[in-house]
Length: 369
View 1 (cartoon, rainbow, N blue to C red):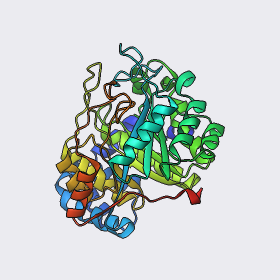
View 2 (view 1 turned 90 degrees about the vertical axis):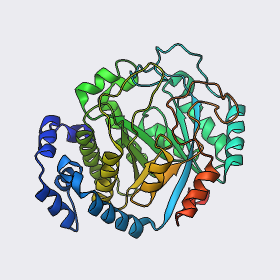
View 3 (view 1 turned 135 degrees about the vertical axis):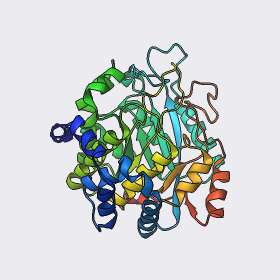
């Protein structure tokens, strides 16, 4: 399990190593054909800031080689904001006083139909808070069964589960799982997640092993930018990704770098990442791992998403509603975070085409199950 592997790496030592990287280290990393974690640390370090142009060119080249001029399109469907956790930065925090919404299967069906009217989506991300008695495995299995006739590719972003539960859901149409570790800083993690199952760091970080062992087709990873030093956090995530690739090599992987947005409760980010730093991080990950899917959500502004689409990003959400039932069933429910890109899916697709790329609505078929 990765938790045992993670204990080999000191957070403070990793931070010092990143800060010690020089311009020469960056140049060596850029000149290599194959990079390791040390090279990745050089590319995300402050020393690499003057090298964004050569990094962008290299990232663009690798992205074209592996993905061509395509952008995979997906859309989230929030099914419940009921949650037993107390994450201090999240609008769904159990302590926040608002009416909780958990969709019925009829409402899930209505949401699926509404999403289909927005555009030819085939990649659906099903999102839920963590409240096992309301939106646990039994509930999610029913949601998948309702959504399956409408979409070819179903991914969930929900509570971490047991290996047998992940496998069970794959039998009901599940293709992928997204899970954000939030931060790999174990001591700080516990201050951000003081209650609920999410407070157990080891259970969450080892969830990716359980996904891989269950044969989940695609695993999505991410840290929440704004909690701890982002450079150290993403280095730990890069180590985690390399571990997963070695142990669960049949699985595909994606990564996301969500920057914190305003949420109910008024939590202010500890760390602010600039657009240039997010671009640097995106380039560095593409240069390290040519095959990983790099995803940008509607948290990011339209102009920035358009620029990064040509330089490393390979999938995007569009038309997102971040509240359960937001498309038709319960549009006034509390949203999890504020959307920055509010354009319709067809508007986003039109821009992608105008930039010489092709929006891909379907990259998986039920027959592969």
